[in-house]
Image (cartoon, rainbow, N blue to C red; front, side, top):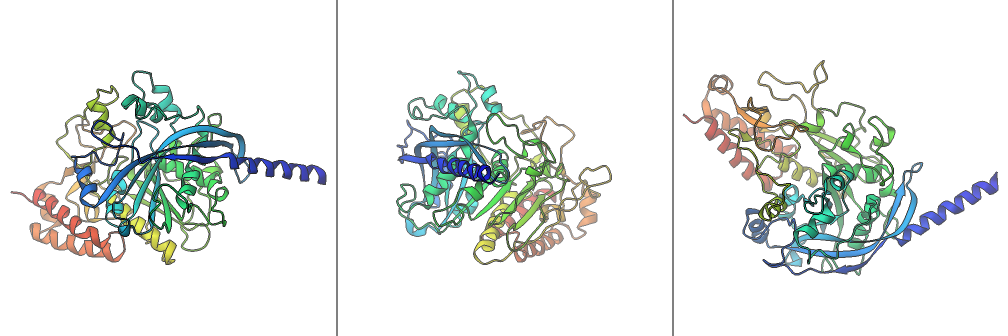
Length: 497
C-alpha cells in the first residue's frame, strides 16, 4: 500500500512538472498601428471620445502578439490535474499605459478579452487607470462553446476568428487550439511575463502589484481560476502570488454562467455545487454584482472576512443591470464591426427613457482603490448588506419601486426616478436574459412630497450624501466633482418647469 502511495505521488509530481511546458516563448510588438492597420477592439479608437480621453491623459495604446505552449487541466481534489501539455498558440495582448514611464504608479490591472466578438472591457477601468497612473493589460484567452457554435466562415463571432475576419493580414498569426482549457495557463503565463525581470512588455517600469478584474464571462473566469486551484498552483519563483487581489464583476455563483468549464470535455459544476463556493486564498477577493446578477444570488455565500486567508467582500448594486456603468459608452469593437458590415451588429432600438445613472463605474473605481489599500495597508474595505428579498424571493422594492439594501448612492437614497423597465419594453440594449434598467421619472407630486424645498432642497441633501460616500470610501475624491455635476444635471432635468 505504501509503495502504491509513493508511486501515485511520483506520478502526480511528474504531471505537475510537465506543466513547465506551458510558457510564453515569443513576444512580438508593439505591432504597427495606423489608419490602414487598426488594432481590433482597442480601448479607444482615434477621434472618438474614448480615444481622445486616452490621448489627453498622456497614455498610449499598444498591441503585442505572444506565442507559446499551453496546458489543459481537469478538476482534481483541491488542485487542478494536468491532462494535456504543450499545445501551441499565438494570441494577442493589449496594453494601455502612460506614455511617460515616470508617471507609472507601479500597478498593473490585468484582465482577459471577452470570448464573444473580442470585446475589451476598457470602459469599466478607464477612469481607474487614467486617473491613477496605472497600466492596463488585456490578454485574449480564447473563446467559448456558444461563440464557436454560432460562428460561420462569413460571420464569425468567436474572438480568435473574428479578429482575422476584421483584418486577415494583421491577425493572420493568431492561432488557438480547439480546447479553450489552455486559457488558465495562458493567463498565468501572462502574469508571469509581467513579473519577469527581462520582460518585453512594460519593460521600462517597476511593477509593484498586479490586480485582476473581469466582468460577466471574465468575472466567471476569475471565480473559476481561483476555485479550481490555479491561483495556488501558478506562483512566482519565490512562491509569492502572481496576482495580488481579484475583483469578480457581474458574475454570481448562483447563475449557470457564473462558473466556466475547466476544459472542452468537462461541463461546469451545477448550481449549488461546492466547487462554486468561493475558495479562500492568500489574497483578497471582492465580488461586485449589478441587480441583474443579485436577483438570483440568494444562495449560500462566502463569508465576509477582513483579515487572514479568505479575505472577501460581496457588493450588490441595485438599479443597475448587466451592461450598465452609470454613463453611456461606446464599445469600439462594435463600431468597427458595424463599419465593415458584420451581420451580428444591429443598431439599438430607440428609447425615450434615460439609461440608469446609478454610478456603478465610480463604485468600481473606489472599490479597486479599497482593494489596493487592503493589500498594502491592511485596511479592509467598507462592509455592505446584500440587496433585500421579499417573501416571494424577488428583490424587495420601496414605495417608489426601487430596490432595498445593497450598495447605496444618491440615485437610490434620494430618488428622482424609478429604476427598472419602462412600460414600453422596445428600448435600446434590452436583451431578454438581462434586466432592463431605465430611469422612469417620478411624478411632480412625488418630488414635491420628497423635497418640499424643490431643487435647492434636493441638491443640499445630495451634497451631504456625496460627503458621506466620500467618508465611507464608496467614492474617490477625484470623482466627487464629476459625480456632483452628474447629480446636478439630473436635478435640472427632474425639476424643470
